Image (cartoon, rainbow, N blue to C red; front, top):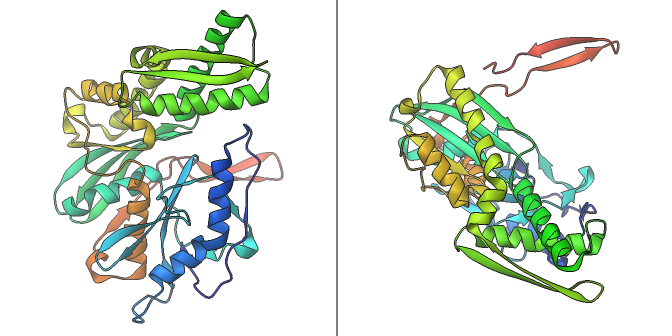
Length: 351
């Protein structure tokens, strides 16, 4: 996207979440409203007249859970923090058209964009990589070939209803069952109790990526009664193992469509916060015959970094001019005529 430094600061509104959220999210949105737009401009406003006619071009990862902004300047990518200094921002904020100050230059597939971040220093090698993108709400897989600065998408697949939120929901169901066992009361229809369980479930999931067990204690969850439970990593994996295994099917699909075997894949690139789950990494390692997934890029920032590199190409730095992206259409796209006839314009996986 391109940013016009002369535009007025964007007006930000915070949509009402389906589940009441923590005050922290409102604070972040307020801090953005006051300073984030001005911060980007003050830090990255051109001083030497070197920017292209597009103006300042930035890369944005618009995630379903968190978003991240980056910019390519002076030979490297900088992640732009929000007004509170955080490198990612919850995606409950939005910009109205009249205040967005942005023009969309290009829209890219997330796994493809992450591949650019991973492969910049490998662009002259001939390699095939799998990008495994497991985020908060969706799952995507892309199989790419990198050769002589050309990033070619060979196949893409995914599941638009699979991600970290689904893992959280399994934990919440477990908590509800434990609460019923302890008290005989079902709190699943009580919004305040569910919001607190949701927060604890997400935090427990994150903690279990580095610890074997976590203790949850919630004061006055319902009718003045406290709730406590211990969740082990083994139990978390048991609750979600079918969902973890579901991520392997799109990998099989892209390999079949590209007519490649597992042995043909040189690297597995992990993107998205849910790839921190140890069992997910182990399943991938086992699936690819012991090949360790790459640890080279930050899973939360990979897409923003790749988008920033692509933005750098659009801005015109000479050192990035030799990056060429050959993407495919992930869905069949068409238009409806007269309410009854659909005309297909681009077929699935058209270059």
